[in-house]
Length: 433
Image 1: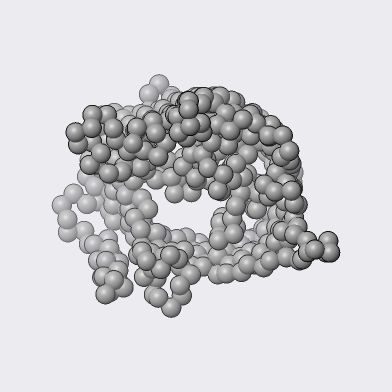
Image 2: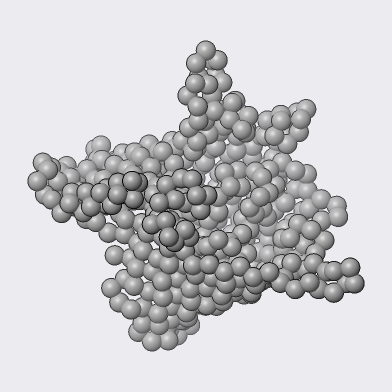
């Protein structure tokens, strides 16, 4: 029954988007993104048998479809509405996209849904499920990685400055916890303030958990400044960030609150060389070997990631955003580490992007990754990642991206006493319309 309801819903969107009968509608556009991601990964775990012989590698392969229908409506008075569904990743290929990979829930989700309205000259209000990215290169939170919380924000243009000030609910739990318990609630919230003018910018972000949330009233603050500019065709992007917060008793320590603090910085230079563009980037985030201390990103706290780097395994690119992704964050953490690991990161990366023909280009990148301060007996080095990608354009918004990635995985990545490596082949067949 659900597949028929889904079909009816999608048909309704087409009908509504093509109709101009509703009062106040100036334009209505239905568009979206359709893609198939395919990969084949061979990973050497470093395991050995009783005789000391390498047991070999484990191969994982799959192809998965994702479709994101999107609907935009412009109204009279400058009011606008945006909605985007997310269908997939679909890997239950005979179930007509009715279920996600757990086999229990509908595969169709509401990814974006917001209304934008002018308040006065230079001031707009946005409300709904808003894709939010930080202003520090997706190192803290990323709308591209589904950081789409329920948000109210003011977007202000004043005196040459762009200002974003908002409140977002990241997790809105059981409302029953508010009844008769005073301040005991179970929500997780974020506060965002950005100011940008003339290539310079500054931000303050604050994440706070209520007492009954799993983080037990913990909070984290982020403050920083940035610059982005162009000098004779040479692009420069840099930032410096500070972080401080407290993990309440029961999160890191059973007996007391634990405070963390740290800093992070980035310097990136992009240089045109003929028809090619070469980029070099360095990022440093301070670490502390004691759990719950050091620089800790919001991405780790909420178990998300961002497209902040150049490579495809230890970082991530769109074509490698698949079932085998497990990249590191700038605080040195990765999936499964929990929200309290602040061992820091030093990474140096370089890339090159150059056209071969009108409809074909090549992209390559390499990066090294290491943690900065780890507990005794643990290894700092995470590994080295080499990425190569071709892009063929069919026209009309349809592209085929394909290539390979090789990453050495050292003990700082495997979290064990073993080293290994990964060889990854990938392809993404994507239409954006």
